[in-house]
Structure formats: C-alpha cells, structure tokens
Length: 290
Image (cartoon, rainbow, N blue to C red):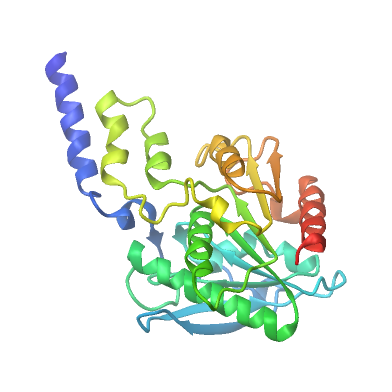
C-alpha cells in the first residue's frame, strides 16, 4: 500500500513538473476556430486591430449598443477566460448590447485571429495594450469606461490596471467588474488538487508563479469602484475566491452572489432575474464615479 501511494505521488509530481515555471500550459487553452459570428447573431460588429508592446497584432471587435434600449453611453471592455476565443466568449456578454452598452473585446496572442503564440508573461503586455485601446476609444467618444474581467480575464484585467496605474498615461476607468474570478494562480491551482494526497496538494504553490497575481494588491486600485459577481454553485472557481477578492478590495465596492449559478453563467444570456440586480448595481456605481 505504501509503495502504491508513493507511485501515485511520484506520478503526480511528474505530471505537474511539465508545468513547472510555466503558467502558460496550465491556464491557457486557445483555439483558432470561429465558433459564432456576432453579425450573424444580430450583433453588428467591426473588427479592431491593435499592437502589443512587442509588435504582435491582436484582433478584437466592437459591438455597438443595438438600440433595443436607450444608449448608456458606456463602453464595456471585456476580458475573456482561458479557453477558445472571443468568437465564443462574446455570447456571455452580448446581451449587454441590447441593454444599451457598447462592447469591446480582444483575443490575447495565440487566441482566435490574434498573431503570435501564447505566453503568460507576454499576455500581461497584451492586456495593457487592450486597456489603452479601450480608454482611448471611450475618451474620444465621451463615454463612461467599464473594465470587465471574467474568470482568468478578471485577474489579467486587475493586474493590468495595477501595472498601468504607475504609468503617466493611466486613465482610471469608471468601474471594474470581476466576474467568477480569482486573485492567485497558485491558490486556484491548489483548489483543483483538494482531496489529493498531501504532497500533491502543495505542488501548485511550488510550480505556479504568482508574479502577475493580484492577491494582496487590489487595494492599490483605490478609488476605482469594484463590482464582484460570482455564482455560489461555481465548481471551476469556487465562490470563496470571489469573496476573498471582495474582502481584499478597498471601497467603493459591491458584491453580488448569484444563487445556484455555475461558472460564469449567472446572466443566462441576459434572461436571468439577477441581471436586473447586476445592472442596477453597475448603474449606481457608474453614477457615483468621477
């Protein structure tokens, strides 16, 4: 029995050693496929191309408010999660266009139509380029500016804002939304190993880098308003991570727990009753922003 347990632990060590020093393989699963087309689904869009710090071309698109509701004169810059690309992820927030919000989103390098190969450290620079592009668009149009990060996109967006804040070009958004996200790469990795043998449980803390994590640093974004939303049935990123984010952040902040919602699914394509709570909270926080 002892030998069997040792073999399991050793096998686990071998598997995780493949990821050692490399958050890229563990957290990013890009595809180049087109899953859905916004225009064919009734959301007119236009392609956008920007350059990252190293010159890599990044593809995105802008979806204007559809006119089904009065325009909120607000741009929502959306940062998607770890898999597929924006041609699938836009569906989770497209309903906001029907509520009067403009949407902008980009693919990180290696995703969708963006050039390059995925690398965790380089993605941090991609995020900065996206933030600047969104800020520039909102300023030129005289719009409010919301940064919205979902799942992995949340920690990327928050870290990008912390980095950008030290730059003279920083333009504080009017609101940061963190949806179903986490603040530490090693902690979310460890949560996936709960129930495993004790040595395996500690491996994520040894091999996953928190260099670009935001744990303990969210307060640096004050006085940027923060809205955290998380489903209490989320098995991918447990709701405890959302509560931790909220507790770490400075005021002004709001927390919405979506009862019965799984990972990043609380909106139900805009049909869920909690959507009205979310939009109400967002509207109130935007009204009080600078």
